[in-house]
Amino acid sequence: MSGVRAVRISIESACEKQVQEVGLDGTETYLQPLSMSQNLARLAQRIDFSQGSGSEEEEAAGPDGDAQDWAGAGAEQDDEEGLVKFQPSLWPWDSVRNNLRSALTEMCVLYDVLSIVRDKKFMTLDPVSQDALPPKQSPQTLQLISKKKSLAGAAQILLKGAERLTKSVTENQENKLQRDFNSELLRLRQHWKLRKVGDKILGDLSYRSAGSPHWQTKLEAAQNVLLCKEIFAQLSREAVQIKSQIPHIVVKNQIISQPFPSLQLSISLCHSSNDKKSQKCATEKPGPEDHLYVLEHNLHLLIREFHKQTLSSIVMPHPASAPFGHKRMRLSGPQAFDKNEINSIQSTEGLLEKIIKQAKHIFLRSRTAATIDSLASRIEDPQIQAHWSNINDVYESSVKVLITSQGYEQICKSIQLQLNIGVEQVRVVHRDGRVITLSHQEQELQDFLLSQMSQHQVHAVQQLAKVMGWQVLSFSNHVGLGPIESIGNASAITVASPSGDYAISVRNGPESGSKIMVQFPRNQCKDLPKSDVLQDSKWSHLRGPFKEVQWNKMEGRNFVYKMELLMSALSPCLL
Image (tube, rainbow, N blue to C red):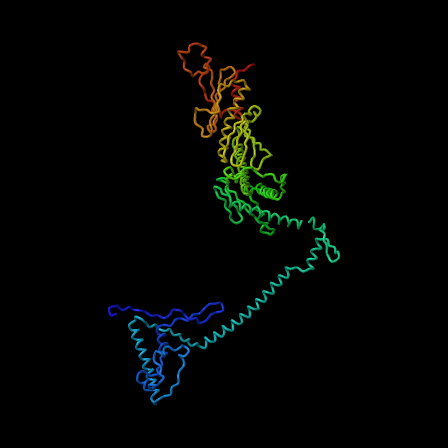
């Protein structure tokens, strides 16, 4: 056994804490474990210094004594530790010896503690914080404290009285709001015709309240408020749910949408009352462009139509077992409809989508009318006229555009256009059936109308030549020669006099304007050099080169009238 190495064994006390108290809610309060110093003091208290050790105990007790050994003293129970056995003093210096023994024990314990603390390995000393003594208060401070206490008591009394007053005031106001039986009966008799039958009071609506300007107006105003709130709530829900390229914005009582890049649609829920402020605001009426009453009226019509469709009774098919909808909607498997196809069949437009489409159409129609009016006021020759149809759809309108010359309306009827204004585009139908589609940009419509007005002048010359007996030598709506027009193409026509001696060439463009050239016979051209090749007199009847006419200096109220004068001057007199 001497060759075996010693093994260190650490013995620690059990960590289980003792329960000090159990609360009513079941929580347990534990006793904190003792520190090393407290545990040492506890063990020291268990030592009975009254019993001697060694020979002294044997002399006192004798061989037949019942003295207990040291191990037996440490094994006593906790309840017997505090009991102090009475032993009579054996000699006069017994008390002195006991005091000296206890002092020696305390000194030994203090020495051991100080030696342990000095090494600072197992124990350290911490300063004990002592509660500071309250400073002595002067008599002035005591007076201030007493005054504060008295003021606090007076404030509590005042607060309690104020609470009682507020309670009484609120109770009085509630009693005023709750009318008594007599006042209610008086109001009832003013508007109702009452009669008592047994224990019951029966009433009929009197003629005084049936046709009144007061209750009916209030009822209509209340119904209008509820309807407007319902419309705005529905529009707000749809604005959040609808996915568009430019998202809709809902801010407080306003919905902002952008149907076109240069157009912003704002739907606002406005409140008004009968006070003076609202009357002052009503005098400042907004402009016609700021408020579209047509859209407001259409909104009310759409919500009423929606309620009508929802509340109307649907007639069920006969017999009741008849199938509904498409047959493929009841199939399953590969032949059944998928989600996208079902959504396309059951797709319905919301209230916001309908009103946005109507706003687009109204804006496009107003922009078309403004473009036509601006051209009519700016250009006097030729004249442009618009005849709007009175019967239109909410999403489509039509207008008939006529381009004429003043005084020659019966002759010049070549340009007649039918404009069908939709939601996002304008369809132009010509007289010969050709269809041209224009976008919502007003510049496209303006350029198209300018090119049509330019072509009208050439068509007018053609019709005038037929009336005056001139021959049409050439005609083209799209000339490939000359300067290039930025808007459309130039048109040209060449006509010859009845005798064939003179010829007139007309070129008209949307930007370049009119250019008129006249060709005279060779015998009237004095500036022509004599040719050695053309010696025969018959070649003198050929027409010479073209000469430009100073069109601005000619007399006449319009282009066709000037052209008529020119043709008349170049035509031979038949008298």
